[in-house]
Image 1 (cartoon, rainbow, N blue to C red):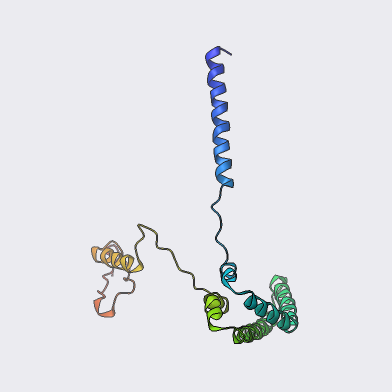
Image 2: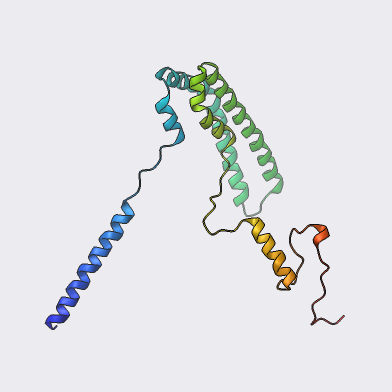
Amino acid sequence: MSRPMKIVFTASIILNVLFLGIAAGGMFHHEPREMPPWEKAKETLAPETIEVIKSTFKEKKEEIVPLFKEASQKKSAMKEVITAPEMDGDAYDALAEELKILNGKLMDHRISSIKAIFAGLPQEERAKIADHTVEKLLGKPPRPEKREGMRSHKTRRFDSERMHKKGAIDAAPGRMPFEAREPLDPPANQAE
């Protein structure tokens, strides 16, 4: 190899190693993750409050463990029914009904446990964990993020109405008020 080729080859290898290092470093460099809501709330709670929560959960553990075991067995049975060569619809319906009842029992247990915990806490301490508790009981609805440049569903609807009026869409307009709907003419290429 000639001297200029050796220099180009060496520079190419050095640049490749540099870019691989940057890429690998970027993969491993993460922003610190946010603490879970319970961990944030726990830092602000008094030690007595944490002790009340722990003792209540220890007392209630004996009641809930059998429910979890039963739920696990029902889920395994449901999986067997679903993956069987011939699915048994009646067995599926029966297991689904039993799982609904079991989920109701689990929710009742959660509610009674939380009531027992909150009954032994002062108002200030209850307020610190209220949001987290309600989210755990009822679930937190997902909030779609509106990205820049996205059009809302209303804008898309009006765009489809505009396109229909221009004749670009040869179908009934979606979600237009009944009075605003125009009768559709049959396509010109079809004989009547």
